[in-house]
Amino acid sequence: MKKYFVTLAMVMLTVADYAQSEKLEPEFIGQVVVINADSTTTLLQKEPTKMKTSSTKFGYIPLPGTSLLDKSKVNMTVKGKESQIKLKSGRLTFIVKAGKNDIDPKSVFGVFQFEVKKKTREFVLAEAGLLSGVQSTTNFNTVPTQVKKYGTESYLVVIENAEPGEYAFTTTDVSYVSTFGVE
Image (cartoon, rainbow, N blue to C red):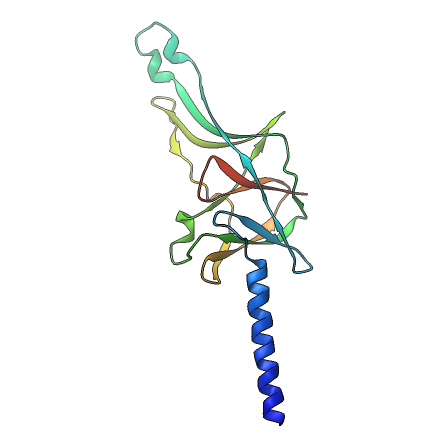
């Protein structure tokens, strides 16, 4: 009889653990949730992005060689100064649903911090200039994270020391990012 109750308790704990993990995972591929202190989750808001290109305009000067001084940037821009989701600074834990989690996480999603402007949040995707000394392309993995597999379709992502600022996850489509702010 004692073995029966021990077995029943083990089955109930396994079912409860499975139900909890299913409950925490986002519903759709490309969604990101933050795990709250009370073990509930909050779905991060997806916001549309725009790509903006800017140039120093040296290329427009009609003198030989001035186009070599031109420097260009491509920025990803999101409207508004801040995200609707606000989190406390420190250790943050997220779950990113990827569809499957047997791929290198850096090729599936990225976490980056925005530069806040007057009416927008911006992230420099690429910068180039022949003689200005700048030739770089930025990747989306600029915030240090620890990543582990979670279930069969997701990743558990931990940011150990999130500092105040505006952040985003890129997932399946860079025309939308999942945003959050840290206070």
